[in-house]
Image 1: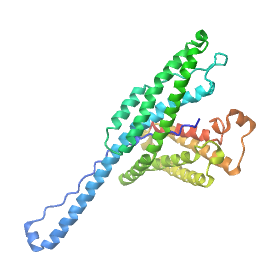
Image 2: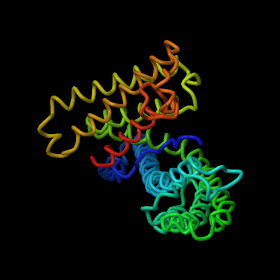
Image 3: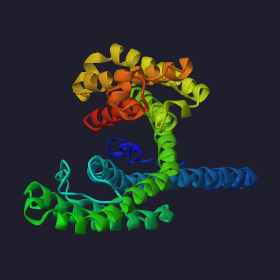
Image 4: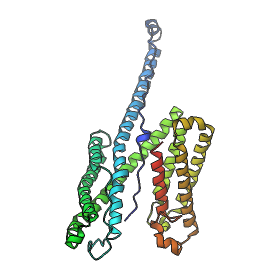
Length: 347
């Protein structure tokens, strides 16, 4: 099973930018008579300025709508995908996917679902009504369909195992549920990654847009934080692999150096404006701690790749590449990235 490559949260970055049209003083009729050519040229310049400002407003509006649309998808993939796919991982940890469950084995059941899938399904329906970048609609709809299919099957299986009903029917119902449950799990995984892939270029477009808007507005803290978060995503894109040997060392090291430099810049600004930031972002210390832990995890992974350090026997017993308990593993990087995202959502 692949690790979930979590998407970013966009809710905190939502911008509704009101750009003001620059007016121009009316020309006096005497001026027109004195130099019609000059007035006409000035009129053309005004029209060009207004057209440029109109295009700017249109771009901002489209990006704001795109952010709103992506927010719905991101909430679903961050919450519901993890809920379902963690269950899939857990189920496969004790069930043979080909043979299904047996009454003669140790039985660990399933996890209880803790999100209401109808919230996600309704949010996707609403998001698909937003008339921007509609090529992603079909992918999002397929994701919603997969979620709607798998949830009742998980709930049914959870109840069956939680009540230990397999003790009464020699696992007969467990074997009946296994085929449809596996099919629904695999469809959910496939559609999760398809939606992430469809969102990726749109998220990068929004990242660039927000960075530029923060720069224009003079919001130094948000500008620096946005650079750090974009750098964090660059690292997870390069480091979220099956085995550490798959990491592109040169690209990862370059991304790591950039992330560390941007984090230092953010901290310098935060240190110089501590009282102001504490008043507005009461949880920044927690965020800063998560960003530091992520830096350490990325550095440890880089060193393992650079030095080609194999996992020790104890690290292998924990799961090696797939264990978030092993320093310098891809799974540890994913774990710390998830923590960054969680802390970021609380700012």
